[in-house]
Length: 79
Picture 1 (cartoon, rainbow, N blue to C red):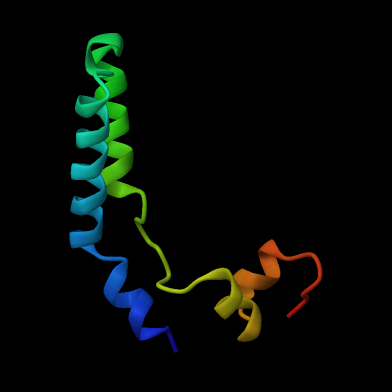
Picture 2: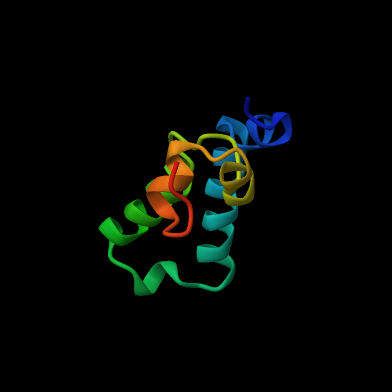
């Protein structure tokens, strides 16, 4: 089972929100003139896809459920 809140939160709208926030950050702090076009594209692309394939849960949930994902990334937990 995946946590309903995280499934609702990590979606395309969240990706769009982070994309817009990143653009705002780059423009508000006048960083665009100091960056190469490829760097701006990379920053915006990373913002848009930063949660791609996000499982919809946090680390604590994965550890409590003793999932294979938690086992792979936690030396103290062997599932």
